[in-house]
Amino acid sequence: MAANFCNDGVGALAGFAAQTAAFRRVETRDFPGADPRMATAAMAEHLRNANLMVVANTKSGEAFHFGDLINGYIVPQPTNAYALWNFIAAAAIEMRPFAARMRPTLS
View 1 (tube, helix red, strand yellow):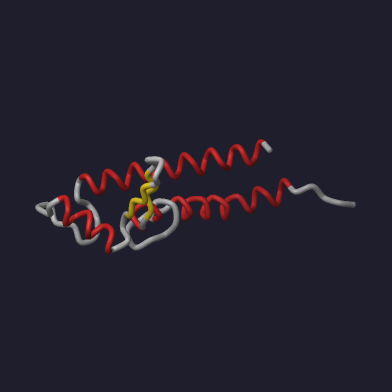
View 2 (view 1 turned 180 degrees about the vertical axis):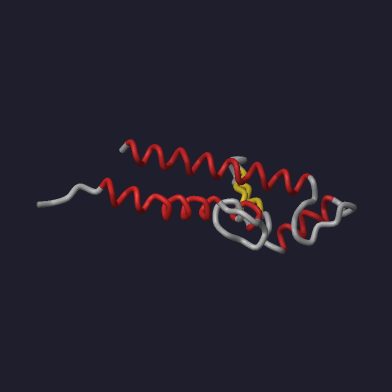
């Protein structure tokens, strides 16, 4: 149970960080196809049409954000140079020799 809690917490933190970074990129017009002089409505349409950032609003007032700008911080996407998954995979590869030494021997 503790491992699931830890994984859920890391996932929530990673998702929040990815959304925050993506919002900043939208704010500064730092995304594929962006023009610094682009009007807000044109920018929103471009983000939606290019599947860079899509917002789904519920009847209860919640907003859910989707798109490659957010996903690119978690898994490899053309929109970002680095993704969390790349760092996790590299750490797992580096841990293999250590994990092999820690494995108990069965007699």
